[in-house]
Image 1 (cartoon, helix red, strand yellow):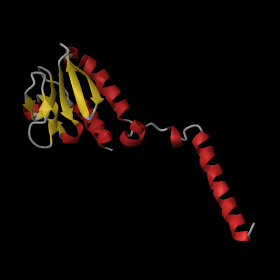
Image 2 (cartoon, one colour):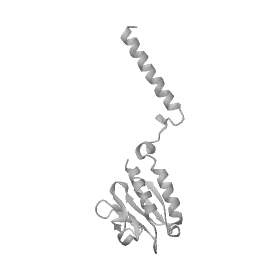
Image 3 (cartoon, helix red, strand yellow):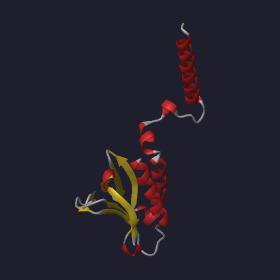
Image 4 (cartoon, helix red, strand yellow):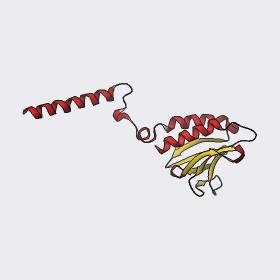
Length: 148
């Protein structure tokens, strides 16, 4: 083997060895990443937390949230579902007079409600005073991870 080819071969071989050992190490993710983990940076973890929160929010009226085919679905207590396209979500913010928190459409009415009509937001609210900040924070993180 010529000297340059010999060193190139040795270099490539050492890179392959390092890469292989990284993939096999505990915590090394390499090729065992799923498409969801690669594209969405673990939105499922936040979704699990939101769904646990919704079990007790407003006596379990909302939830669970499900991500499927580019939509976020919210099932209410009687089994009906509303949906919002992930790509249409503009922002998560408090509703007027702090009566709830909502995922607002970027433009127009993109949320198909449980009645089949379209609305500008998917909202979560309950009667009386309530601290919506934890839910708002989780929804913001959820949307952020879905977009990445």
